[in-house]
Image 1 (cartoon, one colour):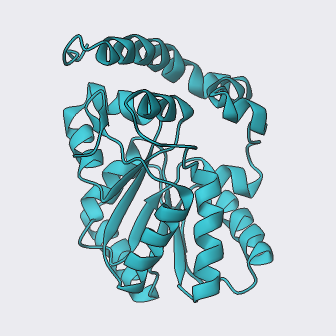
Image 2 (spheres, one colour):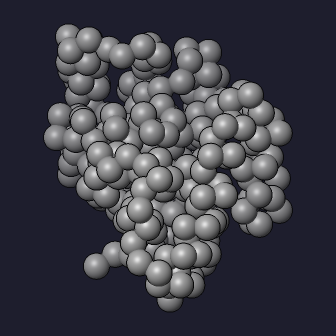
Length: 251
C-alpha cells in the first residue's frame, strides 16, 4: 500500500521512473492520469473529499513539493528529490522527441500557450506537437467538452500536458480518464514558467521548500489567501499525523 499524507496518496517515485512510466503508457495509447502533489493539492484534498478521491484514483501521484518529500522520508521512504512539474515537463518532452511520441497541450491563455510552444520547438527540434488548446475560463458546455475530446483524440496526441492549475486540472483529468486516449499530466504553473510569463524561484529556495514564498512575492494578490489558509494548517496537521494522534478531522 502506498503512503498517504493527510489522506492523499503519494507515490514515492523519481524523475526517471515517472518519465519511463509515462512514455510506456503513451506507447500503448493508454488513457492515464498523473498528478503532481504539493501542499496546495494535499490541503485542497483534505478540505474536499470528492477532490481527494479524484487525486487518489490517479495512476500516479508524485511528490511535487519538498514538504511532501520530507514527510515521506520521515515515514521511512527512500525519496531523494521531488518530482517538480516544470522539470518533469522538460524530461518527458525530451523523451517524447527522441521516441517520436506526439504530444499536446491544454490550458493557459493563448499568448502563454504560443510562447511556450515556441520555446519547446526551439529546445526540442524533433518534438511532434499535434494539439494545443487554450480553453475558456468559464465552464464549458457538454457539446464544447465533447468537441475538445474529439479534437484531442483525432490529433493523435499520446501525452497531454494539462495546465489548468489546482484543483481544476486534477478534476478535469479525472473526468476525462477513459475518454481522452492519452496520458494526461497535470503540470500547473509549468506553462507560465516555460512561456516566461512568471519567473521561477531560484534553485536554493526550491531545495529548501521556500518556492511558495518566492511565488507569493511574485503574485501576492492571487496567492496570499491560499498560503495563509493552507500552509499553517498543513504543518500542524502533518505533525499531529506523524505523532500518531489519529486521523485528522476536516476543518
